[in-house]
Amino acid sequence: MNNQEKRIPEEIAPEVLELASRYYANHTQSYSPSELVAAGKEVDIPAEFIEQAIRDVQARHRQQQEKQQRLAHLRQRLLIIGAGVVTALAVWIGWTYNSIQSSSSRVEAAWAQVENQLQRRADLIPNLVNVTQAYAKQEKELVFLLERSRQAYLQADTPNEKAAATVQINQAIDRFRNYATANPQLKSSQLFINLQYELSGTENRLAVERMRYNQAVQAYNQKIQSFPNSVVANTFGFEKQEYFQATNTDVPKVFKE
Image (cartoon, rainbow, N blue to C red):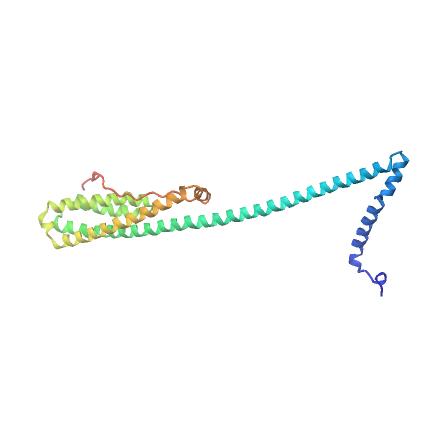
């Protein structure tokens, strides 16, 4: 069976006819050089001018096609470069986010260690109260100050609130120590001596953990405030963390019962 006898599937027949019509239209709407020369003779245009015009027009069309091809290649390269930039930017944003999140997690972990020591210190308050009541039942003001400082810490939630409550605990413990110094019987008791060791150990551990926390906060704050990390930090809502500064101030006035 030759090519003319082959059957054309029905689903491609419309496409074949459409393409054949386009070819025929292009053929009927085109002219050969000899036809153009003949048409030029009808209006008294010499053949060499027709041939020159054909060459010029064809050259101009080739230039236009080459220009369009160059533009198409340029657009393609720009798209590839743009896609590469977007990909690189996405990778950098992801890496920066993970780095900042890691620093934030280290701050949280360091604060948890600080809280452990703060809680340990607050848990010593009942022992101080017991010692005070055992050796100085009349010191209701000191007992009230100790109990109030511990309650303030237990009610604190945020680092700033805990820092403020820690100041009250510091004040209460200092007040207790001052009282113990002026009370030889209390000062020489084994209970007081044991508590002194526990307080000193806790305060030393607290100082170390507070230093580690502040170092973690410093590294985190520097990371989110430096450009271009600050762009990612602001976009995802990372906020500056405050240092933990627990310093003693004057003992506030406590009303006696």
